[in-house]
Amino acid sequence: MSSPRIVAKALEIQIASTRITGTLQLVLLAIAAPLALLPASELPRLPSDLSPRVQTYAEQQKLPYLAEPYVSNAPEDLGDGLPVGTLTVPGTDKAIKALLNDDKAGKYSNLDSILLWKDGRLIFEMYNRRGRVDGPHYAMSITKTLTSMTLARAIQRGLLKVNDLDKPVISFMPEIDRSRIRAGVETITLRDALSMKSGLRFPDKNFARTLGGKYQRQKFFQALFENTEPVTLGAKQYKYTGTDPSMIMMIVDILAPGTAQDFIAREVAGKVGAVYHWDNQPCGLPKCGAGSSFTARSLLKFGIMLIQGGRYGNEQLLSADYLKLVMSSQQGEGYFYHFHNRQKKAAGRRVHMVSGIGAGGQYMAAFPALNIVAVATAHNKGKIGLPLQAILEHLVPLFMK
Figure 1: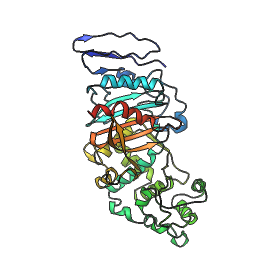
Figure 2: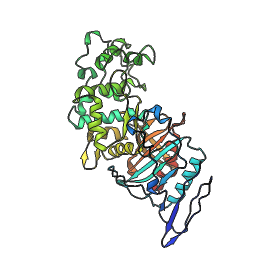
Figure 3: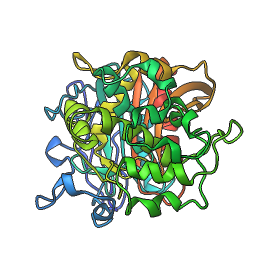
Figure 4: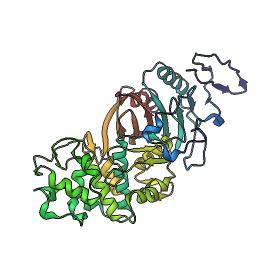
């Protein structure tokens, strides 16, 4: 893989660089100056015969690798609602060079993109391998996080209230025959489901999946509620599953006009101009454990809403009260409301991070104290943490001095 061509400017001096095949070429200047990387006209895009709307997980595997990485510390304004700026803080040149060197060496495995937003502007954009600015990338378990944000939009739209999080899930499901459900199912609340503590337990891990083709929507949950083990207080322990977020999506599907897919298209993705593909489960609901694909810029917009208390642009899109619960560091480290709430180390110091994380290395991460949102995509086998490592090693430290 060849490396990026980079032209740097310092004051009135222009230095022409020679492209050297197979080597990483960066011009380092004695006088600090912004880097001007690959021209905006070369921003990597999908081939013209491919529609972003049908970029499923399987279709993404067919994308050829980019001939060379694209990287810019002055992202192009694409008219997509993302204000752009320039990354020029001291140490920028060195950080970008180190990031590119490490990526070329395979330190972060199959990294596809990194985006960085700071103080209201997109200031860094990088694509490599299968990364495309207009190509949705599979998000894996960030789909759970986006399901939570869909609920936050439903609350903001008045379809339910934050206080309803402590109501039983079945109180929102009028078609459930309570005389046939197992004991304790009636105690499962939305907050339980949002904490992966519903207590639903089945004969094997694929049981719920086998029911999806036979039963649709509330009939699917009727079958689940009849076949679970009894739900006891002891059973309501954390267990990472796709069933719990599916209950949240079922409630959105019931309360919203049209279907949950309609609501996502109109009130969630549509509100920020997201470019995405989101598959349905066999039971008729949007997939919730995994199954969505979004462009990196689209994921960034959701992260911006997160760090701005539910606001995007001039509109309050998500419930501010719900986002306060998500962003609170008082609950300690863990998985809450389908977000990872963690303390991470960068530049030798701890920094609070709230994020969605997907298998293979997808990140939509907010750093509240720094007013930073970072997005990464990758198609790693295992090695989920490596894209975040790239962000923590090279970009976040620029703002921790």
